[in-house]
Figure (cartoon, rainbow, N blue to C red):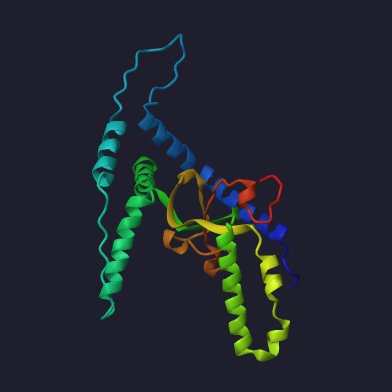
Length: 250
């Protein structure tokens, strides 16, 4: 069987997503969600013919009721409790509990959670994407004479240790002059700017579900996995954030 090219795989995924969107549109889900959002925004009055127009009055109960429900559910920060299910791991459970409560308060999880609850009350379902974000940046650093000397001494000590452990390789190791020449006053240093968990609210309109799924529990796999069911969400990213995209448009 010939290998499927990346372009072909991309087209297959696009076709599946487009089929899911057509199914959602034909089943009336998009129009229903839009209508629910209009009810919340107070857009409940119908356009009329000026010749046969009559007075209309609107009391926006959806707005007040939903705000009361969302506030009562999401005003306070939740308190997570982690219990060990294996004897002797109580300390690990305590640490995990403290980390989870800290992350919820300090990484903006609560705001995204509130937005998802708002979606759930408005259109019937809310979505959150959970993951880990890692980002590195490279910057140039100017070393002082003392820092250069320290790096040279450290490199020489490491080479002496290698030569003591493997005398047959001593002749191939760099000399002191070569080490001093390699340690320049300006060096590039990699700095980790982000290494934290994240939670992102995903719009219900950006979530696509396999229309061939038999029930919600069968979604969530990969298109090539069991039953071929899947759930995907669309996220907007800059071209520079896509590996290998270069200067090509998104």
